[in-house]
Image (tube, rainbow, N blue to C red; front, side, top):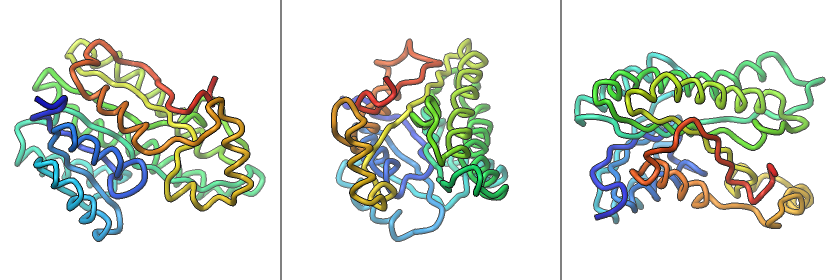
Length: 248
């Protein structure tokens, strides 16, 4: 029996980057996965095709996690087809980096809206189902930047730090109903986003990491698998960094 067999797992932002790695790794471990995407149906279909080799159910929905009504409709749609949602992975996020001196109010608010509001919206939408089942697991993606800050990312750091406080509160509220909530704080992970960095900047990041290398999507996805499984049944309210020691 696979580690996540018969579990129904929802992942936001699963068509690319870390989200894609999460979807594929969950499917590999036997989960039935529903993931959201915001723009490219082509990329979403490519993920579905790749995941189908694992013989599990894979579905993709175009949905904006930062929109409250979209999230309510999404979860209602999923629950019309599935008995329950076992795990929610809040992965959707954006960056709009700039020095505070040059950062616009719009860029600050939009990053907070997508990164933090999406976590609230999806958690709020799935909460009743998990309470009814008296079982559930919520995993929220933060960042080492949310733990230590980073010049030029005041908006991103604020949003990722807010996710940590929110998650700890949810863990305290829902723990008595056997609903766990944990946070993963990735460090420098090689994705389409980091590939846009010039070589000099990328090398500087890598040299600041004790393990002297960047991480890959599967490094985060492997932890998602563990936290989603019964092996992590006594872990809640925790922030776990996947960063090669960067946050040490």
